[in-house]
Length: 164
Length: 105
Image: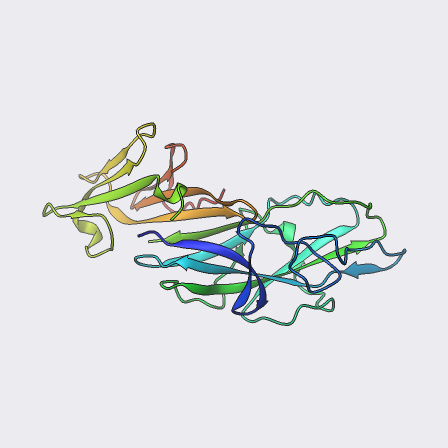
């Protein structure tokens, strides 16, 4: 039987909200709810305002008959959020409480289908049971003064996995 | 299991006549045929015959999900010693590429 995977926005390494068919919204609060509360604000000159970080992780909802591996994530390679808005990403083995202080990673939009993020670089074991699996994808959005106000059209992350 | 994951199933025929539809309880050199069968009659079936020109190495499927949309494609891959065969589940289209080519869409 084929396995089935979901994407969770994590509140801990093994807990979170199913966002497979949902949206991740960067905010000035540790909040997975997609609403207009705690929106990102545009700072004055010479300052970059970071969002609270987000963690995304694969969740195996239906165990495969054999195994799933080669977990990957990537963007479309094009940041259409507009001037003054960037997103950083990195993959790690553990969960750190979401905060505005991270400041690490690399440009998310530098990871495309040709150079995807390896989502099982740390948790390397193949997936053969239900539950959280693979590494945690850490994301942070940053807003600088050139940004324009208003709601942004969402960018889409693609996730892939191999099953034998 | 969602609809896209169910569009194709496979069967592998071994030299001794056994038909494999799951698991990998066989040696690659025993494979003489692999057939991908569609669940829908509007999609084509595809068969690779391993006779003398190329040999079966392995098979797997690669599922693609877009966050906010879920699964949007499942690509079945057969790796031989000469080329890779990719089958797109949603259209039945195939792609023959270099044996080391990794497809991401």
